[in-house]
Length: 303
Image (tube, rainbow, N blue to C red; front, side, top):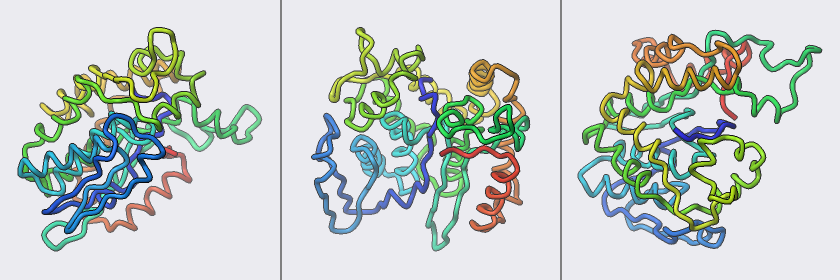
C-alpha cells in the first residue's frame, strides 16, 4: 500500500465536510485535473450538497446516494476515495473525527491515531534532552501513530450505515485500478518533498514517471496495491487490525523505525477500544480530554 512516509494522513471532521441529502448537487467542475482556477469555481444546490476536497471523492459520494445509500454510506465512500486521491492529507493510514446526525441524535466519533505501547515522553528529544527540530520529528518513522480511520468508519457504518460495507469500497477500488488524473495539489506536495519520496520504491512506482520525475498534472495515476488492500478490508475490516494487513503495517513500520516499536497488540487494542461500552458512553469533550492527556504523556497524534 503506497502511502506517503511523512504520514500526515487524517480526516479532521468527516461529516462536517460532507453534507448530503435529496436533490443533491456536486461540483463536477474539473475531473481531469484540479487546478487553482478549478478550485475557485462555485457550485450551488437547491436542497443539499456533497462537499469534499476532490471532485472524484464527491462523485463517489453522489454515486452511493444514487444507489440508495444514506449520508453515512456516502461519507465513507468519499473518505476512501480521498485516501486514494489526496494521500498527503487524509487516508486509511491515519485517523480523524466524525460528527454524525442520525435519527435525531448527534454522535461524535474519535478515530485519531494513538501511540504504540513503546512510546515514551522522551520520544522526540535529542541526545541532549532538547526537542527535535519539527521537520526531523515529522519525518521520523516513530511519529506515525496506530491508524484509526478504518475502525472509526466501520463503527460509523455499524451504527448508521444502510448499504453493505463492501459496496462502499467499490468506487475507491475501481478508481485505484483504472486510475485518476494527477491533481495540482498532489503534484505540488510531491514535488515539495521530492528528496524524501524519490527514495521510497512504493511511492515512486505510483506517483513518478519512468524518468524519475513526479507525474505531471493530468497524468494517470494507478494504485493497484491500494485497491487490493481495500478489497481485503471490504471482505473483513478486522484484517486491518488483526490480519495480514496489520502484520504488514507492523513489519513495515518497524523496518523504517529500525526497532520493534510497533506490535500487533497495538493494532488490535485500537480496534478493541472502539468496541468498548466505555468509549460509546463518552461525550465528545471527554474524548478530546483523553487525547490531550495522552498527547502530554507520550501519545503520538498526526500533524
